[in-house]
Image 1 (cartoon, helix red, strand yellow):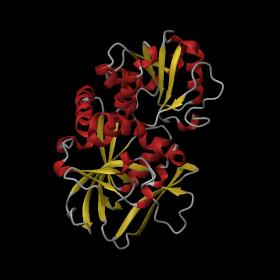
Image 2 (cartoon, helix red, strand yellow; image 1 turned 90 degrees about the vertical axis):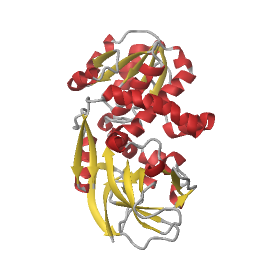
Image 3 (cartoon, one colour; image 1 turned 90 degrees about the horizontal axis):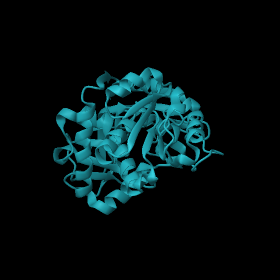
Image 4 (cartoon, one colour; image 1 turned 180 degrees about the horizontal axis):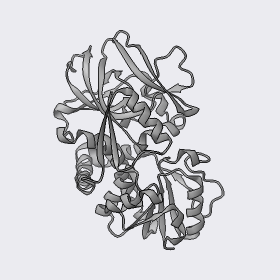
Length: 365
């Protein structure tokens, strides 16, 4: 059996190659997954940008004669069991979880329950357990066959928005009256705006985006006000929290200089503008106001589920997830593409910042 993968040069993210390799023999106790579909979003670009610092390159080692310097960008999607040497996992079963930009993945199921299992493969254990869990769709309460595309496109990004709002509320929004969301057209920012609208209605939601995306962002109805990046000087000077999804060093500096002492907290989340990211996720040296702080969602989720448990925590997320789906209904066109090369092409377009935010991309490799 053969497989295909997209290999990216870690030091040159615009260098992505489609390769084929032999699958090899399946190990005892392992399960072979055939990738059915995954979404390609700005979240995947963040995985690549910070891959070395957070171990994202370590989840799916590339099959190559000389793998040094190469990596596979992780995706969220659906897969089907095509071969199994595990007594509790049968051929034909479908799962949802963390997958490579490729056509196949071998996993070693552990902590198997009716609803899920974890991949216990040794090289994945140092990373957050959030990424190693696979939902078994036949008994997964989140699974809706009619909403599989939305789950792939929005699900992980929405949950990041949910946990940011949860963190901010636990800190009483640091005394802020408004939150500034950069890259407001990104799906993670939209997720945060939606959850804040539901759970933190007293906090004014201000979206910053490019002039070309302003109409789309306004059409979502998720923000109280939408401004372009050129209009930072118009933002009201009041106690403020910024959540930077763009990773644009120049923009971050403008925000800190504009708000200065009225800025109560500066949160760094993503890096959608990778060509301008500067040092790290936006650059943080010598800025007025509070020091920008990186937000690593998996760590916050571990604490969240420890506090609420999987059942109650799942209910809290599900409640706002339904509200989010209702809010974005019809605002994003779901585009399905066939073939792994389409994933490679879409990834490169996103690295270059040229993908329409009004489209959600699903690839069926």
